[in-house]
Length: 147
Length: 262
Image (cartoon, rainbow over all chains, first blue to last red; front, side, top):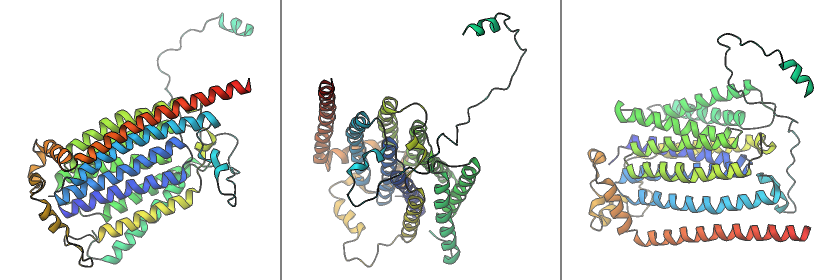
């Protein structure tokens, strides 16, 4: 049987994973990232279930986690097929691409603040120069003029 | 869960919740972000993590609980990176790291089979399926809908408030069952269930390393929960058939649409 502080710590980790997944599924717009966040919530619940199972000395929690795995596999298979169908129809993985399905009295989601290009470009690794500079090809400048 | 002084513990929890909300709001994709705000969000997130670590129980024995601290930090940090990363492919890979952390947590908790099954089933099968779909459907470069998110401030506040409430309710847990409810206590229920599954009781901390844990879990799974296993098998078959049916119907619809447009 597990100690009570260990149960508290494990439940805290489960709660943090669940909350992070909740924030992600509420706010991200990529359909696949939304499903990843749902899986993150399932992981938080699994941690809590295993902690309770160990605390009570009962195997029911772990058995329930096995069924959570099964349902997650089924859900991923069916949902990814739907995501692919949605992508084939709209050409986007955007959840807001389906906002024509909303209620008639709800406002339309507008992307007014989006800048034209990516203002936060990824930083790629760079190599510092090493060794001697190879001699340049004298024909290269001539070749480039023909391109 | 909390120390001797409840006021300072409450202040600590409030500070942790607030910095978690602000850090998530700073880190989530909003379209216009400077690297300075990302750095500030990261620092605030680490502060929130430290606050929640301090909110948790004081780590007693240094051995396995230090391991637990490390793997749970890996899981939570990778989970946060999963939801704030712009690129969906990087998001999936951060999720794989979060799965590794969760598997470590399960191993420390003494669920060996589930730890290994998490790696094999989730990271090996489900996540690879996600990556396949991403490579089928992802346009080159960052899509506009990956660079903005809908209502990041409200979502971050909602998630942080939920986390604070959950932490409070976890802190209320004591060893004694709650006296408010007139349902039979869990211990009594376990004592009733004990004759059915004798292997389920008397799980001490020392037997965590025993090798017949998986056998006991299998006996429980195929003994008390045999009907649920059968239902899960039917569910898997239905998901398989359903996925194939949706794909073939979609292809037929696309082909007929192409015929009409031509």
